[in-house]
Length: 462
Image (cartoon, rainbow, N blue to C red; front, side):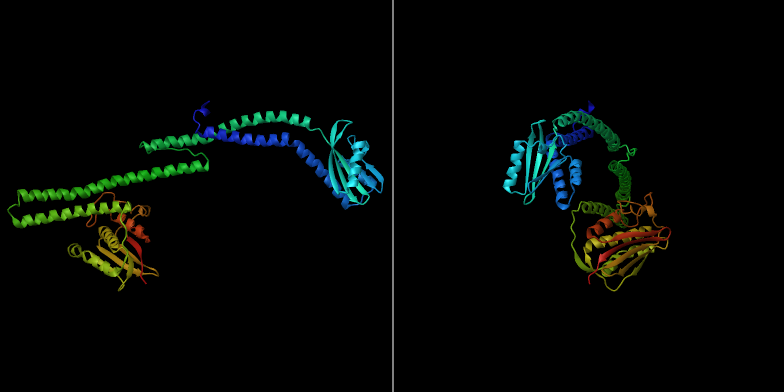
């Protein structure tokens, strides 16, 4: 059978578990019905005698009522009071109290002489070769009750049960096999479907289809694979964008370096002013390449968690002012305006070098995407335990469905990459990693055609 081919399959394991469970249940049934049946039956009969005794000691009965009580419980009863003997349900064929043989008399006389409150004796009835229980009870001085009930021969019942249990055992094992095959197929089919689609996904085929099974755990796995496929597609798209954008940012300065180097060699080698001007352009473009490579290396280190933070106390206002001074060139040449809304002082705690990088990258991003008024606003707002830093541009904004992915490497608000005025294209990803490492709250708010606010909170020093 196919079920035996793979002992690690769901089908085999399901069959194994069901058969083991069935065998345990059957063993319990065999033990209770065959081995312990006599013991249970004797215990039941003794309990019946105890119940009758409780009724006798709690209530007063007439002779007719005692006869009825003995008859209903299928026992015979002998009541002795001051040498007077009363027998009830004497018509019971198995009642040994009616025979009054020497063994019964001896047991009763010995009990009376012992002066004990209670005694249970097992008897053999020689008349019909049956067993019974004699329950001897002393109620008071000169007052005794003897209760006798037959122990039916359960051997024939045991034989019948044994035969029935053989058929029941075979039936249950067969049903276990059928149920295990059904359950395993019900579980196997969707799992095989998921496995095959996952293999397609691993081989690079992103078009997968997994049917619903209406089994929660399997459907959760199905949803997880769909989510993984979606994230893989997104990662592939970002990887393509990253390669395209990095290639563009590398190609442009390299082309300019090569062009100006050739001009120095072929045209301006004798003109000192032109030569120096071209060399300055080559140096600027080399610096830009260096910044790009360093940003990518820093991002790689941060994502690999290889850089530790150096936490110090510093004035956030002073830091922002020093950073903005470095943009004087584009203020003068490009007419950019920086609107600062800062308190006199803001003492904070953090890694000053990393926070400087955050502010640089967010300001660079605002410069690249601000509106035609070329205005960037930086404001610091004091809160109870933190300072809120807002960096605001007046650009065209970001679509709501893109707000969660702008922190990805080389994400662009426009798919067609255009050269930044400042920065390298990985700034927001660096910002995210630095702020996550500080465990600072951060985010972005944006309205289409109105602008965007990037913000973060930094721990305040009281």
